Length: 209
Image (cartoon, rainbow, N blue to C red; front, side, top):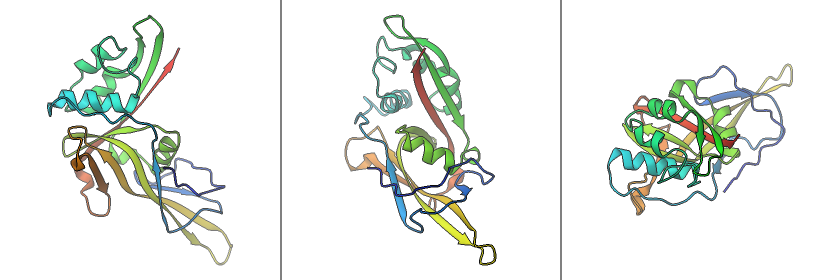
């Protein structure tokens, strides 16, 4: 459920790598955790713990369109099946570009791989507000990112009366598609988990041509 109460701040990709975004404005709920989740994602479980099965099931979840990905006769059946499940960078290169649906209609897939230091909170907040999930590789395992928890933090200048605000991502809300029980729900907490063990993120989107 989207719990975004913020108003009046234009999110811009500025300077601070990965978790921080600076912007100016008023009206945000400050110093309180806010949560964005992607609605209506399918609850899918991989047929086995094999890396390829986990990757395909995770992609199925993110695209949530069987015509596009990733089962039999889908547009990405061959490309996704040929991708290295140990490398989201390779997955991105296999998926990127023009593909054909089973009835011949073309779709354009945009697949963007980013390392943690190349991702900022502006991208993340905007992506999830637009109801897109993502993939995250953490400890060499692929997870579906279906939401984030973040906070607006503000500091003021008493002389000028201006206010500087920063968005800080506290948590990534994850699904482990190997499981259907309580092990499925996983949280990456940036305050306690090791960011160096995150290998990267994959953002995918498909549009008809």
